[in-house]
Structure formats: structure tokens, C-alpha cells
Length: 229
Image 1 (cartoon, rainbow, N blue to C red):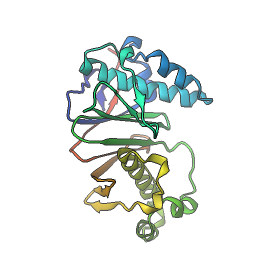
Image 2: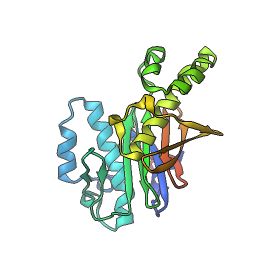
Image 3: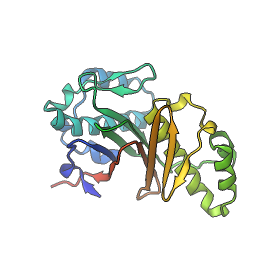
């Protein structure tokens, strides 16, 4: 893992995943949120959901504050009609966030649209029942052709990669996932949709969670953690 303290956004495209508890261990001033974001997060009912959202937004401010030359708490986001966040005074910057299973992820890009997703494995999933509801028929046929032991790993990969792609296009949960066919390209995936030609990749994290990112331009992907001095 990369130390969070060594991580700097210098432009290009960056996708970062980190344990939520590691972000929470950073100095509070480095991950401070503006009042509107704090109030927004407070409305969510589940404590773990609130903690992970706070960590994701804290990581975003930790990375963006120095790049923008402002205090983290002064990084105020707006949201488009699809609830996708953006920074009004930085039109060339695209950003995306995700959280789940004790992990958070942030995507930043000044070269193209970007989407990120992180999916935990703390809860059992009935992939046999779920697969027909989110896999394209061709993906489903390939999935069913795998050995039984390999299917859960592939299902989680397709789920997270597809979500990262649809977050990059701006569709998110509005899209019908079965209409989206990911095309394999080596260990990566390709998707042409909504005028974008996306390449998506993913990593298996230390506890089996899956971290995925999608963009038109090359992405530097990092798994980071806070290491106290």
C-alpha cells in the first residue's frame, strides 16, 4: 500500500482506494468538510454509511485541497440533475466517489470523465439469483461457463466494473445494467456508451473487496493507507 501522506494529486487521472478507518486517522484539518456536506451526510440513517461517506469526502478534500490551493473545508461541491458531484469553479476537473465494506474510493481526472466503485465482501451475495438481473446475456453465458468456484469472483468484478463505467457516463443506477455489455481486453474491459470510449480495470483488495475505475484516458490507480509517524 501507498502511504496516504505520500499521495498527491498533480493532474492527469487518479483513482484511489483506502480503508475508511485510515482516512479517519488523518489529521482532521486535512480532511475537513464544508458545513453543507456534513449536514448532507448526517441525514443518512446507518452509522457505518455515515462514517464511510465522511471518509470518502474527507479523502476527496485531502487530495483536492492542495491541488486547488485552498483549505479542504473550502472545497464545496455541487450536484447535477443525476446527483453526480462536480466542482463548479473547476470545469475541467471530473470527480467521483464510492464507499462500501469499510473501503472508500475517489476518482479525479482533468483528462476525461472518470468513474470509481468499491464493493466489500462482508455480506454474502446470492450471485446465482442476482446475475441475470445485471449481466448482459453474453456476460451471463460466459459466467455460467466458468467453474462454480470462479463465478463469485467474476460476478463481483463485473458488478464493480460495470458500476464504475456507468458512473463515468453519468447514468449510474438509472441505466439498465443488462443492456450494458463489457468487452474484455486482456485483463481490462472496454465500453463505448453515451459518446464515451471507456477502459475499465479493477483490483482485488486485501480482504477480497473489489476496487474498479473507468475512464477514457490512462488512470494511475493507488491503494493507500495512513501509516502513523
